[in-house]
Length: 446
Image (tube, rainbow, N blue to C red):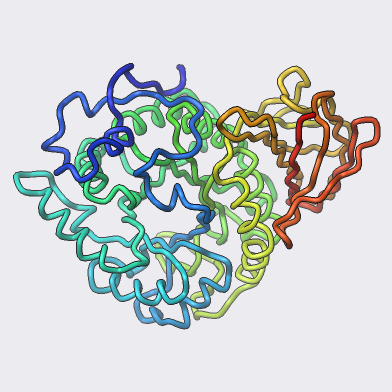
């Protein structure tokens, strides 16, 4: 099956909002507005898109906030101190009173919020439903920290038509607010074709402004799920084909057969997501759930409210690495993703080939790496390469040789948010990486 495409000449919601912001909602749109045109390779969202997708801040969010009894300014300051920028509703922080209570705390801490309110999520389209949705939206829009709504986690396709009608109304009334959905992962290697069809149906029928998914790869027996890279690749392909940014949830709590991640395993999940072009990172979870359906261990905040080692590790990664590197990557286009020095390749991965790379001639070494090549729109000939350690257990060391058209290489320093020159020896430079870590390089043309 090919990547999702749209009918030529029709309007997507994103295009429609650019010419008709403030329209009254789905019931007032022409039938032709529910088909849309592909923007293959688009990276920077269109004007009128949600602020979370268009501004310079890289979204670092999480599921499962502090419970109601812990909804205090101190708790939201603690969230911000860990380097997060975004809070998603959940736990028992749902509905009007609980959701609107946290918005001033979030604002004071410099955070944005995607609350949960069943007046949005459970709305059943009927005569006058647009006015009901806009009334709820107006309530929340009085709070500066409000960034949109978290509408559903892992929605089922039978709900897509209802969600499309809801989000069309919200997008027309407030195009700067995000409607957040998160897609189920593919854990079955035999389900690749079905999963591509599933993503295609979601993009076509819901017409989202971004695509979020989760995939938790780290298992207690020391193995990783074989579908991890295939899942990233399919979401990446769908996002590029539809011109949509992609976000991913990473595993940050032990539950079921999944282990509690170490520092290197957190960083590894993040860097694999960045290498595959993700423009937002979300943690599952922040507060440790007490759900009886699963036995949860320790997330960033334990059930007793104390910080765990995962909090300490996430704080370091978010503040010293992900925030500055994410800002560099947010509005770049993911052109290529290569796995180098790895055999056999994992399911869904593409091996490095000089002929396929825009800027690299060769990769030498004995330790596998994953490389994401990125560019800007508008004919800019510069390229960025994120080189990520394929392993979260061992150091990696490789030598990259650039193509003749590359005149200079510089390395991004997250501590200063500046690029420094990298010496070339016969067109080659060395890269050393700690377990799970990555480095961002800028390759400038002659």
